[in-house]
Length: 260
Ligand SMILES: Nc1ncnc2c1ncn2[C@@H]1O[C@H](COP(=O)(O)OP(=O)(O)OP(=O)(O)O)[C@@H](O)[C@H]1O
Ligand SMILES: [Mg+2]
Image (cartoon, rainbow, N blue to C red; front, side, top):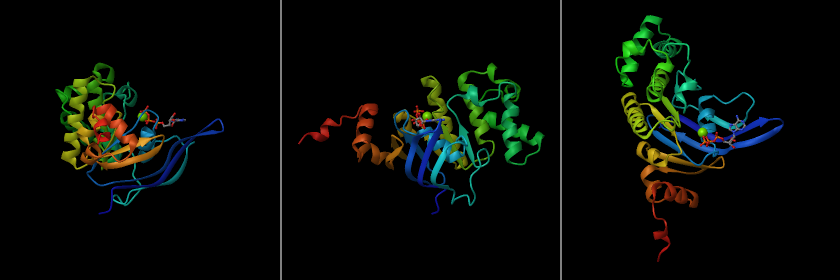
């Protein structure tokens, strides 16, 4: 089967003041349609850089090597239309002076060639789908009138308004408290299942990644250290780094393996 997304020998180098930061190197990774892939690794390992490279959201000054192709789409993916991107901080991804209903409607209007009244109607349906209460009334509110969890639900509604084939969530639940976090994870799981979207879930919360993903890719210092089905990675991590990372975060006792 042709993968939705195919990444080959990807390198990303940030250029600033004449020096380069090698944020990613030599990454090969495929994503199948409808697959849920988690990207884990410590801070600075290149997770967000990968997510942004896939969505075409890197600053123009970066130097790229390798390729990001979309065999499953047949064209280069466009953020909004083919990819929905949910950021860590909904306050900065939402426009403070536009009603939340209009913000969701705008994505549908721009990406689905939908007339404004139909886009508005769809926005209210989407606010309902992300389980916001009284969506018709809520559509007229502004971001500052909503809680953090509600804002993130709006951001998710906007991300799926263009009916993308891939949803990317970059630490989308990290700024929320534990209960809201669990609700948003459940929502993301439901939405990708209902719409058959693929999911790229970037998180340094490994327990969440394990809970949500079919497959997990482990990054360290900009390199893909290991990628495996979630069950396989947990039961038999191959690399020393993945073993240590899982042991530290999931409380697995790796010392047992060392015993005769
Ligand atoms: N705009 C930028 N300009 C220069 N260097 C950058 C830029 N963005 C990221 N980097 C560098 O690239 C490397 C990878 O950063 P990235 O943000 O992808 O890591 P991350 O895994 O998402 O980390 P975190 O878990 O903290 O979000 C880091 O060394 C970082 O300092
Ligand atoms: Mg990041």
